[in-house]
Length: 502
Length: 132
Image (cartoon, rainbow over all chains, first blue to last red; front, side, top):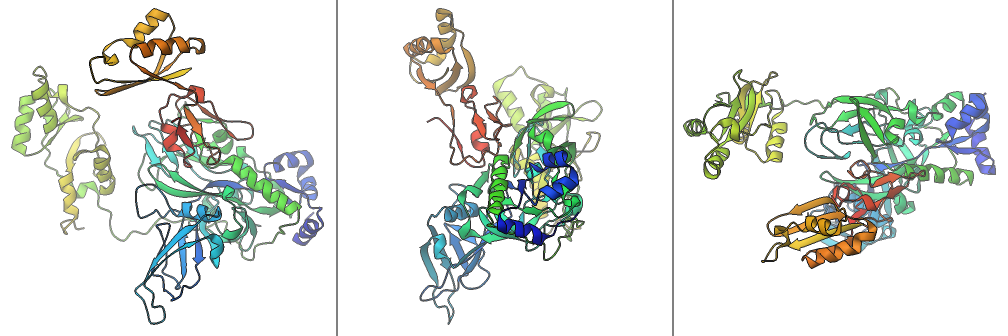
């Protein structure tokens, strides 16, 4: 049996359509079977409510008198992109305010507008014959704008990697706070309720399809940026009228140590046309797998430590290498349910009819990494290969002489086999002299937990280590922990002034 | 019940020089659990947990010893308007103060809180704060 969209819409119009949420669907299919569920259910509503950085809105402010061609525009001190027509601008959710006394960004401005608050518009211009004005400051409400059209380039990820951190320090990431030594796992996504997880082949989710967007009736534009459905990471570009949105489903947020983002509620209604759609909407948390990725690796390709299902993640803890680690969701499952529930009510009350895609989204497309034409400098290319080192059982006096003679501030400490076991600095030696005459060997004063780098580490990563640990040199070690060089803050200067060339 | 003890270390009557807590335990026989302590050269702050019935007694004795005592009823406070029930705080908290109920609503068991402040920084919505 198959069902036409016209039939489903006719049922929505006469109030007889059977609408269920994606959370209810697996149980219905278990009970009635696929054919039975197809006969019974007309629409499955989905929902997600989480951090979606790639969001923002186009505004048209109307013309002032005398008129201005806005070249730079700020809304509550947050700069909007004004490189479009005279009084149009796009405000991105993650853009932060110019004054840095608190973390305030585009998302806060968007939330303020939706909540009915006043926003200060400031704009500057060079002035033209047709637009003579050079600056303007005014206060606006959402209703004062001609248009406030939200256009989010990438929302509603099909699924997302869960995050953990194997390093010894707390990381502040877009995946939230990650405690050291795999102290926690954070994840995002609504699992069984997630819109794209219910139509992974993009049969009914595509351009032109009506959706719930932050309380407004929105629409899918098409594939989102970085869409990679071929690897399970499909995304959507969506749009909707901000004037219909509600604060409940559009919330500014700040990821500590990372920046501003925006939580948005999105729901897509799925017409149940055939048994294939019945099957895809019967998906459970247990069926949706994702990887736990080590965000302690500051590179594009981070290692996966475990593969888990959304059921595992939602249970509150998962196992990583035999240890139980607690999980935190960044998206709100309660919010996702509220979206799916409200969308269900809209359709039951005949407020929204469904449509099939006017253009399909490619279910096989995969994202590609950036093509980099300039070579990223590696530690190998700027490190100092003449390493002055010392062994752990030498006297401190010898270390002091060696530091002076070598005109250096850092001595990597080696054991009898030439392996790195510590580091001492001029500061350590001075401190030993001043505080306690009894300490006499290098091993008594050395730092054993050495922050180090490798020859092929990108210089940017090494520089970040220097800054975060407030140190000025890193021993460079090979795979067997032998010191092959030292990278000091001074070596970073080689990158400037044209001394570094490939 | 949790009591937050604060004292200045300036002056001659510096309670930080004396084994104040040990003395109170010895005299009263009440078992005090020290959950957090931060004592530097200028001031001290100690969070203790005592049985509810003995809280008044302990409070009096500590105050006599020159310690400022504040009863912490709601150590961590959740702003329901700001909270979206995401759960980012749940795995951050070393004391398992936060959990979900059956409806995926965030529940706060503030009694367990030791005021480490991790959740306050980690909350994406600025919904958590420390009792003022």
